[in-house]
Length: 186
Image (tube, rainbow, N blue to C red; front, side, top):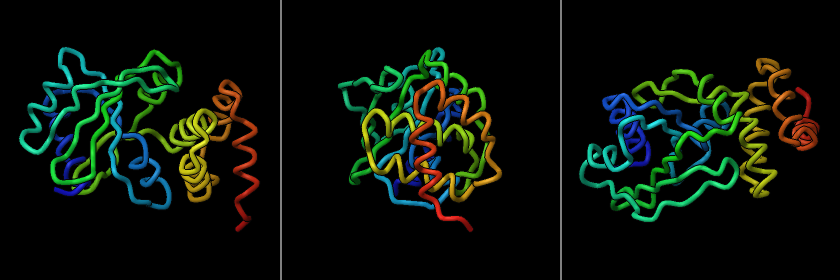
């Protein structure tokens, strides 16, 4: 099973179980910009009456839940990792947190093509805001690059007032401005 196939299977199961979700991380930045390879698919979920175990059981053979959950450090939410047998690919489930931007990003999610199906992803603006927060926290170059690529591809189509508002709240406005300056004019 490929990573894309595993991701589509997860979307199918989440929708069958009526679990609200948004596909974030590299899948969302790839959708709005220049695709890069990835070894995982990140989902923010609002499980309701279900558990991650329910989702993994429904996924079936080939999906194995890591028994050790961890915490995501930006929004301080629970993270579960599901391994896809025979591949280095894995699925990460993050519980929807009480963080104000996490909540807003979830409310603003949009339905878009994901491979041969449709699924929910954050808006381009929310991808940028999240990537900037991750860069500020962990200094991962891929987060800088992802934010830069989404900005370069989406450009004037972005709601800059919305982005500036959240960057001002998160203290990431200088990083945003530095990234924008690094993009050559057309």
